[in-house]
Image 1 (cartoon, rainbow, N blue to C red):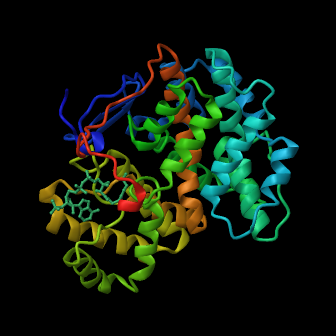
Image 2: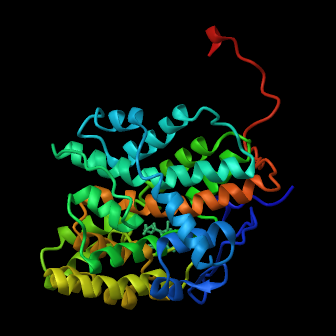
Length: 376
Ligand SMILES: CC(C)(COP(=O)(O)OP(=O)(O)OC[C@H]1O[C@@H](n2cnc3c(N)ncnc32)[C@H](O)[C@@H]1OP(=O)(O)O)[C@@H](O)C(=O)NCCC(=O)NCCS
C-alpha cells in the first residue's frame, strides 16, 4: 500500500493538456502559452476556446464560438424567476451553486455525457452563469433585472447586466484580463472536485455544483474576499506594519499569500499587480494599492524565506474593488472564469474516464467485541 499523503500534496492524480504550472519558477502556461502572453493579447472567449480545443482558433472559429456563447447569455424563465425569489440576504456563491444545480432540471437530457452533449452543456452554463450572478445582485439591491446584450463580450455583458450601463473600455478590458487569469489552474481543489464527481459518470451540473462549493472556501477562491476585508481593517498605509506584524505573531494566515504549488510569486499576481496599480490611479483608490504594496513588502521581509509570496487573490481584491464590484461578488467572479477550466477538465475526464476511488489508511482498533447498549 502506498504512503498516506495529507492533502494529497505532490500526488499526481490526473493528466491534463490545459495548464502547466512550475511552482518553483513561478510559471503558468495555458496549452503551452505563457499566461502573460494571453493576458496581454488574448480575450476570455479566445482563452476558453484554447482550453477546450487545446489550440488557438482561426478568425472564423472564434467568431462562431463567440456567437454560440452569446446565444446562451439568457437564463431559462424558470431559473430567472428562481434567482429573483431567493432571500436577498443569500450569499452570491450559494445562489450561483444552487442555480447551476437547478439548471440541470431544465435540461431534458441532463445525463448525456457524450463529448458533444457534455460540451454543449458546459457552453450553456458558462453563457448563463453571469446572468445568474448579475440578476441576483440587482434583485437584492431592489433594482430591475437587466436583460443580457448579445452584442457585448462576456466581460462587457456581465458588467452591463450588473450596473445597467455599458462599462468603459478600460474597465471591460481589466475585467476580461481577470477572467483570462483565473480560467484554469491545474488540479486545484475545485477542479479536482469536478473531476471526482464526473468520474462517477454523474452529470455536468453535479460536477460544476461541487466545484462552486469547493471554490468558495477561504483557503481557495474565498481568499480574495479575505484580502479585501483585511485591507478594510487597516486604516492607513502607516498602520500596515503593526497590523501585519500582529497577525504574523498570532500565527494568523495573511489572505492572498502562500500557495500549495507556487513557491515563487504567482505569475498571475504579477499581472494583477500592474492592473490594480493602474485602476487604483484611475479610480482614486491609490491608498488601497499602497496598503497592498506595503503588505507585500512586509511579507517579503518576514516570510518569503518559507516560499510565501502573493497569490492570484492578493491583487485581484484591489482590482475588483476598483472595477466597482461589491465584496461578496469577488469569489463569484473567480467562479465565472473558472467555469472554463472546470468544464475543460470535465471534458478531459470523460475522455478516457477512470473512477476516482482512493483508499483510506485505517488507523482505528481491530477485532473489538460488541458491547450491548445496557453495558456501555
Ligand atoms: C494556500 C495555503 C492553504 C497553502 O497552504 P499549505 O501548502 O498547506 O501551506 P501551510 O499552510 O502548511 O504553510 C506552510 C508554512 O507557511 C505559513 N503560511 C502559509 N501561508 C501563509 C499565509 N498566507 N500567511 C502567513 N503564513 C503563511 C504557515 O503558517 C506555515 O508556517 P510554519 O511552517 O511556520 O507552520 C496557505 O498558504 C493559506 O492558507 N493561504 C492563505 C489563503 C489563500 O490566500 N488562499 C488562496 C490560494 S490561491
